Amino acid sequence: MKPNQSLAIRNKKKSTNKCKSFFRYLRDKKVLFFMLIPGLAVMLVNSYMPMFGIVLAFKNLDNYGNIFGGKWIWFDNFKYLFGSSQAYYITRNTLLYNIVFILIGSTIAVILAIALSEILNRKLAKFYQSVFFLPYFLSWVVVSYLVFSILSSDMGALNNLLKSLGLEPINWYVSPKFWPGILISVNTWKWTGYDCVIYLAAIVGIDKSYYEAAAVDGASRFQQIRKVTIPMLVPLVIILTLMKIGRIFYTDMGLFYTVPRNMGILYKATSTIDTYVYRALSQTGDLGMAAAAGFYQAVLGFILVMTFNTIVRRIDKESALF
Amino acid sequence: MMKKRLASATQISQSANIVLNAIMIILAAACLYPLLLVFAVSITDESVIQTAGYNLIPGKVTLNAYAFIFKDATMILRAYGVSIFITVVGSILSLIIISMYAYPLSRRDFRYKSFFTFIVFFTMLFNGGLVPFYMVYTNVLHLKNTLFAMILMWLFTPFYVLIMRTFYTTTIPSSVMESARIDGAGEFKIYVRIVLPLAKPALATIALFNILFYWNDWYAPLLFITDEKLYNLQYLMYRIENNISFITQNAGSMSNTSDALKNIPAQTARMAMAIIAIGPIMLAYPFFQRYFVKGLTVGAVKG
Image 1 (cartoon, one colour):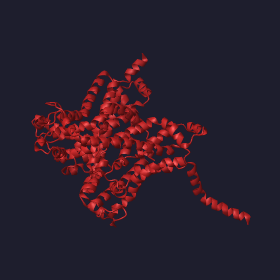
Image 2 (cartoon, chains in turn blue, yellow; image 1 turned 180 degrees about the vertical axis):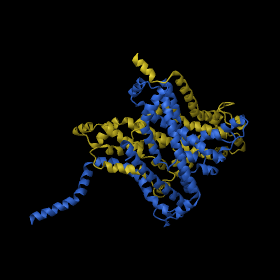
Image 3 (cartoon, helix red, strand yellow; image 1 turned 30 degrees about the vertical axis):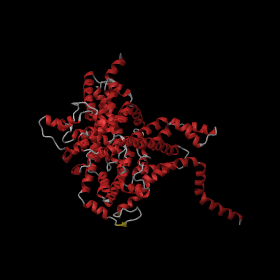
Image 4 (cartoon, one colour; image 1 turned 90 degrees about the vertical axis):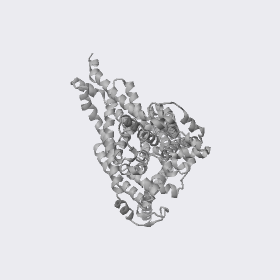
């Protein structure tokens, strides 16, 4: 009788063991758990509660009620969204702009970083770097002012120049065809200095003896750049590019919303998923379509991040997100 | 001799150096040109702007635009106040929350660290989108038209948590914590007295990123603020830019004379606003820049 009983108790103990040990651990390390609480609370509000809100995409939100209210309409929001011509433009713009940004941005940043690292006068190089980095510190609103001072149709510096050259001034803010070029230039202007700093740090970290060995073998400085610097930068370029690809369905509201001054006539060239969602939410009141577009963006983004994380892991385990 | 020859073989030639410098000067000018243009417009007389447009060389220098803005500066000063408040409170709170959350994740002996790390990771992977986020803020928490909405939105950046955690794990030896524990220090005391002082460089980096982010934020007020009194500086500028008549309307209601309306330097005043908003960043720039470069090289390369 006795041994049996003890066995039963032991079994019972085993099943509650995990739970019990968690609570004992919680008590032991209560300070550490306590430190997590504020962060968890903010994440709950900013990230996890909205995550459960994705069901809104499948509901009728006309009455603007709460998350729990509203009638289920399943895929009707998506039907409307993809039935409109907008779905095509916003997806195309989001993807194409990001692809161009990645290609142009990293190419220019790498070239600039190499060039800066080669300049003989280090003080001058530092000065250039500081100037290139400056646009990163300005808010998008300030940038939109700067762009306006150049592009304003009646007073802008660019039209002044065109007039003084005897050319017709251009109404930049009503001509969509110019905006891909403008947005790409502005984005490059704002970000190149930032990316450049990262690449410059990697170049500085390259062991000098590689160059010396190459020089002994008779390589010119240009050959050294081609055979030493660039190959050493490739892993970093790949990692940073992959990280950007993971965010390819997301765009900067500042660039696409404030810089074109939310001009309706430019939407075909400037509207992206993010600006569409914001406008649908705040201006047109198409809550259902905004929620559907947000869901579409989040799901595609998630798939992409997972895919590219797997690829990054294959290339360089250290750089993978998880 | 050998060393010297090698040095010259691992450097570019003098002529290449001159070409590179020339290119860099052009690029630097392209970076600075818009800023200089806005500054030049802000000190140009309005009548010159009306006829000649925006030019880098002000035809007639005047500080009228600044005088106009500061004649009735309540709106701008209030916006400045809001910006400073949000930046200070937001950056400090954010730093405390991030550094506290990252610490247990860095502890090798903390059994649930991978679980709590994953909770952070997952917010980087997936989100509910803008509409549910907006609904949580407005319908569940009722944060519309509160300063707290602007603070809460950027309080917890997952990427900074990861940088912080990496910094703790790589720079703070567990033996130091161990010996403190033997001396009878509690967990929290170890964190405050030993871990935080050692983590100063990472804390400074994240603090700077936070400061810049809060100072430059216009998106949170765009979403949640409709009350003019709660506009921060960036959003006030956004409103002015979006609605050219904003300044004129306000000035009109203040002076009640149609005559005053004609004399309002609308163009130059807007650009003066931009200069006023850029000012603090420019003053702090040399200091900021140094730490940012350090932080970027630590954080971005090794997240």
